[in-house]
Length: 477
Image (cartoon, one colour):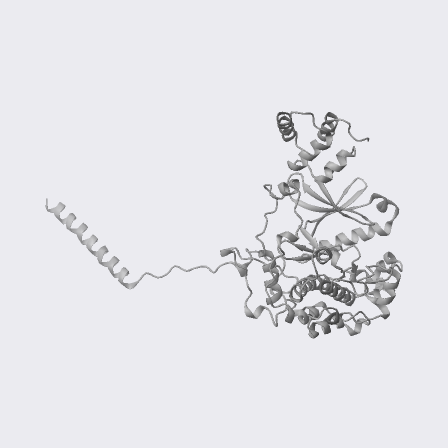
């Protein structure tokens, strides 16, 4: 449809789009007529709609191009496009009734129809993410289908990727980089415990939110140990090289279908290298060259690039980046422990200036009744840190915040050993405040003091004698 040529045509399409409730739109138009003495252009009207929080810039661009359909997907109103890839797009959306902000990962219908591998990968991502429930992994709430459109309903993380953080701001200091890397290890351990290998750990797939929590996203290349006996992974991968050349493990560049958790350890090591150095292992070269170099070439030692990196940390990263999987750490739990000496400071939440400002329409949705309440800066990060540093019930246990005095609940000294969350769980993820172990003990009634008991006896006897005297007097009359 061609672009609107008049304000009246634009308003007509806006009404048809369903983007703005009719009463709000009429109120806006009435105010528009009284506030403007001269005729407005379609561009000026769209700009005012955006500034008033009625629509987003994404909506304005679509409406200006003549498009007014497709903003509603199931129960969700699409607000913005967050990203795009070979399999589809990711949108920011708002639930029409709950007013909750979510991210929708929409599979391209052409991939759904013509590429069964892409479709199966999409379902695999949904199954994997639906199994995982961890503060350092982006949650998936639902898998939906509208006609031929498949989409995942995911947690919306308001923040920026570690890739953008380092590229736009600066490389990170040792304490901050190790703190973020340990959060990634904390989430990966949960995925590994559930039998999943991510296979695409990289800074662009790690989101930092406003409270300082790092979350792993994009399980589209995840490999499940449960599929090992069915040959599903081999069929889906079809000898393709999966992953990102700057962060892929050497063995994954040869055969992506047979890698284990140590491939994620290599990718995490390459990610930590980038966070500190501000550049990947091999910044030059084409993709094919980088894949070869990952197998045969040693990167410049991180402490040579960054003199402030301790040699002990350089040794940890060097071991994570060993070419042979057997020479690396055997689990991310070991990586978590190895990085602990460099993660002893309290890392504050990222400055507000680092985070992109939400447009008025998104800010309005975020503050709407029924939407998720904003968490005080740093509080959620403190919960994760408390769990990481005290071993709060193991990596797959629920992390709680006691509501009394808004203090973080710190487990008892016996619940964790050696600053690790990877010990035997002490509580299951299904536990809640009504679980017997969390119910306060009943308080028995305290016995009455002896003095009070004696006084009651004396008063009772006096009352009986008084009544007896009254009866005798009555009988005497």
